[in-house]
Length: 185
Image 1 (tube, helix red, strand yellow):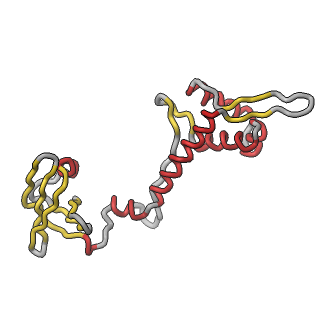
Image 2: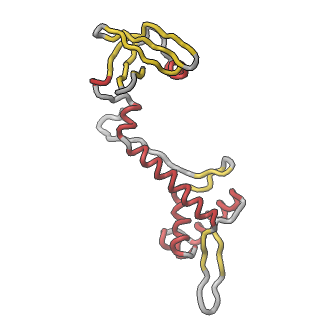
């Protein structure tokens, strides 16, 4: 833990195609800009990017996914040209926004991160020692002698026992939920 620093989990989201990154935050902003402005040059200007950079980015995406994400049309003497996203381009934005939104929700969920760090209220935890493990089918019955002294039993999956590496004699926390007893190590 970093002293005197407030830190929080963070991540970057991108869309891949066949293992190749094709769209990250900047690319999503470019596609959204083209969708809004109906023009590559206006989108580039609005985003503070050069036309060449935006054009090359579009070409990189299209080369990676082997399909157009935007189509352009030339202007005539009565009007300028423009651009619009293809269905694929629009779906890339939607997919990116969906994933980014979901990740933002997860990262903002303090209760989720507290559970992962086992910062659970003391009244819901009982420290103790594993005194026996009985594996049967897909479940395992783990008996924990708590400090009171008393023994509580948690019925969890064998996979959970193996993932946690629980052995008889281990010091663990019996985390009490309203309908079950879980094991934390």
